[in-house]
Length: 289
Image 1 (tube, rainbow, N blue to C red):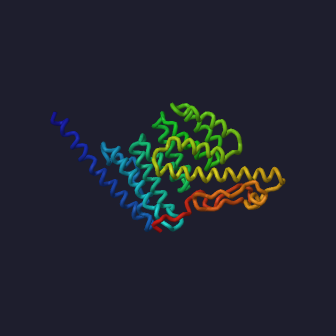
Image 2 (cartoon, helix red, strand yellow):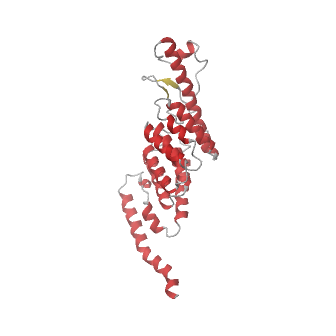
Image 3 (cartoon, one colour):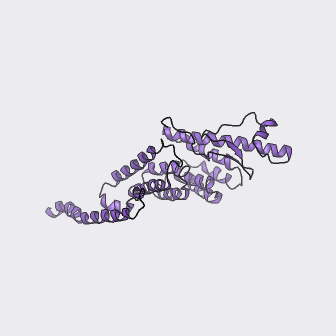
């Protein structure tokens, strides 16, 4: 009985040297980083799992909130890029550590998919994070759905995207993804399919701020889709590619050029595709600036 009561104390005493060694290792690692980037180092998840003892869930929550608050603090910046590369790496590493501690915790995966792909240009890293979550949350069809969208829209890997969607279709509630997976077998319709993806995401997005961001992206893609259709109409009618969107106005194919909700301007690129100067990232300054 005495030994059983003393066991937790003994374990803590044994872990103290490990904890000190971990902190020493981290301290030495931070010294090797460039000035201004020292916070980019995050203690690896396996080490955190040792030092957090039985409080894995609490530590996971703390790391997620730390990343969330840090990203929120960047929203009022006026400089470009608004978030530096090392900051994106730090946010990703923090979310990685959070999910190492609690791989069933959904919020870090959702947050990573919302910001690291569109704004942070860390699509493959995000898919790697989502794949971990998908292995543990094997009942959740949303994570394969996110991976499918990222593979389709950002990486142009339709085959891989279709595989992810078919995996999601096997899970409860994701049956409708099967038809979307089949659509990706057909080349083209990239913008139209992206709109379908975002509309599906919006149906299941409750957070107000996140909904607003997805709605903005949807509005921008819908503007591009309208202009793509107008460009195709022009080519069919006149047998040539328009060089400017103004030509579509001049011949009456469209009555106005849609506004880019991100603050940029739509244009026809040299390859004939419709793009925007904002690159689907906000160019508008906040009211505080």
